Image 1: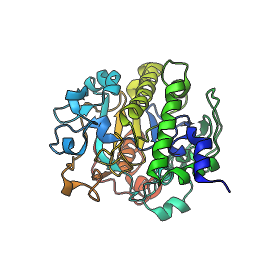
Image 2: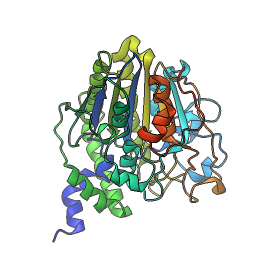
Image 3: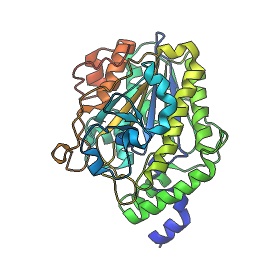
Image 4: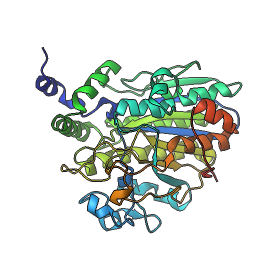
Length: 392
């Protein structure tokens, strides 16, 4: 009988959760009518939106975080007098100034309380609003979008270790593509690792530290190394196809699970996200002005920092938007506050809007998809509410 300790010893290099693994990524592409482009980036592992877009103007932030998210005093870049951008995203500041970068704080899918990476990602990519729909409906919201639009063709490409991305899963035909990589992990192994590590803080921290060693060894030192290389390859491939007949692309960036030593973990992940966006911008050329990028994650992280310099699985997160078609340079949506009475379950940032609404309004404004189709078919059960007008 395989003991848990032996399992950890023999496979610690896999890390806290395979669903958040920095070596696993996917890409999918589809064609659509018109000239507008949409890129959806899935940030696997639960990005800490409070650290990426730091609400240093909230008087309760410092009581919750002793070392994380210090705002401009810690090197973050002031955005609007209330929010500051994590210093690892400094290369994106020219986009903010040009109105090509924005964000929505305090957003989430309807997923609540269970805080499983896999279930959270499934709900995000499926676009569903309930657990029942999550397990019964196996296609993804981009695939359902394609089924509502005439004369659509699609192809799916994925890198190492994952089956087809669920977000484009469904009746639409698919193909595959992967950048050169040497790591592979089956979906079954991912599920097993998530079950083994997820609920044990000791094992979870050890796995996260082991993954940090792996990433430092092969990840972001130079362009040809590990996850950074693969992310740029994915973005270059997407830009090349988007410059031709493709109109919709989606790929994933992993490595956001930051239970311990978050400053290092999130810094590396943000480097990859910044590289992906700038690679897309460079590769798309003038087409960038017709492009909308949505970077979304399965859920946020706890408002309070934990004892190991990290944060645990939470609820409210953040949505990053970029592209020449975006009306950026601003935070979109309402800020709920970080006072104890304002937090969800007394521990998490309170979500004030369904992240699916931003995606739905982007599809509405980019491709003219009717609201009743978006709320009834593409994102079943969604109330889109008012248009946040994320497009210029």
